[in-house]
Length: 187
Image 1 (cartoon, rainbow, N blue to C red):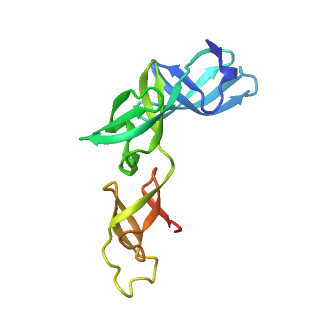
Image 2: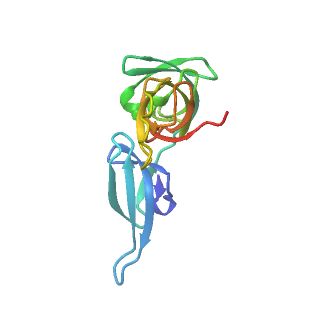
Image 3: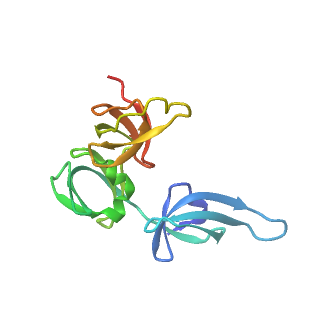
C-alpha cells in the first residue's frame, strides 16, 4: 500500500476493484477543513474518467504493469494475432481491446502491450503510420477552393479522407489514433 501523497500522473492504481490510470492530481487545503487530494482517474477497462477525493495519507494500492513488444502477425475475424518478439509466443487479442487504431496496423509492425497479472490490458500502436494508398478515385477538376478531400483506401483496408492530389500508389502518413491524414510521405 502507498499513500495518496505518492500519486502522480500516469500511476496505475486499483480503485473499486478496477484498474485506473491517474490523469491529474491536485492537493487542496481549504480554509479550516482538512487537506485532501482531488484525483481524476481513467478506467482502463472502459475508458471512463471519474473524479474522486482522497484524504491526505489515505492508503491506495499502486499496481505494477509489465510491457512487452509484440509483432502484429494477422487479423483473424475481429481478433488480432500477435507474437512476442523475445519468446515467439503468440497471443490473440480482441478487437475491443485494440480499438479503432487497429485498422491502421500493418502485418509485421511492432506494438507495445501492457500486461497486468499476465493478462493483456491495452495496446500502444505508434501514433503515426505510413500506409500505401491502394484505391483513390480521381479528384474532380475545380474542386480545390476550400481544401476538399476524398476518401482513399490504404493497404490495411481502412478508409482515410485525403486531399485531392493523393493518387493510387502514394504513401501517406496517418494519425492512428484519429484516422486523419497528416501528410504525403517524401520519396
